[in-house]
Length: 173
Figure (cartoon, helix red, strand yellow):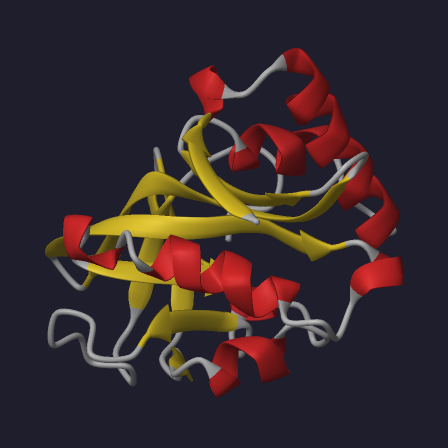
């Protein structure tokens, strides 16, 4: 039912199926969002036909103060609208969470609709201020405060402290 594969191991048809899924699941999924979801490990639910659920983990560098953190950043978690509330999102998240030992922490930026899933799985809201590391130094990202979640128990991080992500085009968080 659930399969994990690196981006390079996915077929062109599977990649097209994942992109079609996220385009149906999200009204504003951009080409930048798509690029952010590639280059890591994907968990997907396939049955005969379309991709029913998906999520990926990509490597990123986060900082808590001066402390660098190796982060598995969760991207593009989606369940086809016709198959929601059947546990597919939880199955995808379980497969991605199995990758946690390879990182200092797992993190994600949650949509309002996704928050109940993540909280039910033990993810914690990052309560401190967020920023992005630019060539001019850290720049506050207050629009992202309140939407960043990390897997509970992650490397003794201070959830009330500041957190900074590496810069990337599109949505930085």
